Length: 222
Image (cartoon, rainbow, N blue to C red; front, side, top):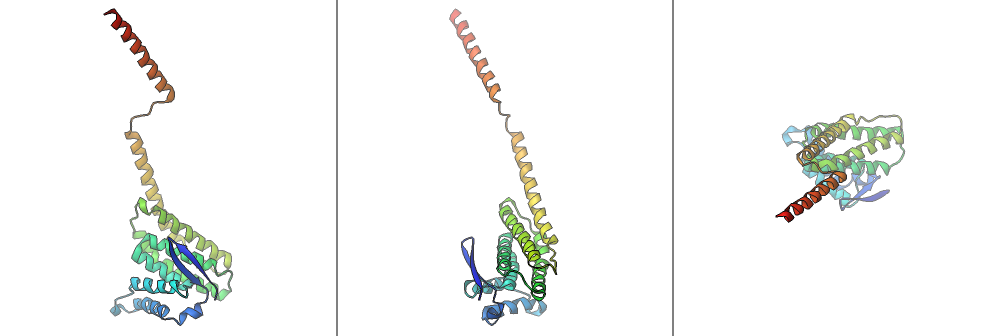
């Protein structure tokens, strides 16, 4: 079994390429069961906190494969917002990088997983109202989405994955926050009194010195 361990924000995640081995495990079955509840409205839909919990059980033991990383990314966005989504994208890109080149059948499966994840997150990403404090997570998510896109195209040429919707949603948030931040800085600069240039400061000191001498001379006459 090929696996590797990565640390994100001091949390350990084990990744695996051996999907066959983890498919027989209870946490894997629980994740699939919870995901499939979306087809049964009577069951109340998917509980993403439960999905996240069982994915983390796999991450702490036998490892998460690419599919489980995808489920985890969606679950983290649903439960933790942008920070969780960025972590999910980082795990997906690390998992894909760990797999290398693939045949046409494997490429098709990977494309379907990426398309599924992107379809589940794009509207939620657009609806978010991130602030300046979220800028780090936005950059992180954007970087790993771009890496995923590049890795997928490097590993095969048969299929394409559309990251445009997700990428544009992240870019719009980043652009809006940066524009607001720079506008605020300009307003603050205008509100502050203008700073004297070094030659202006010298001129003022010279003027004050001359004025002091003049007052001293005048004072001497009295």
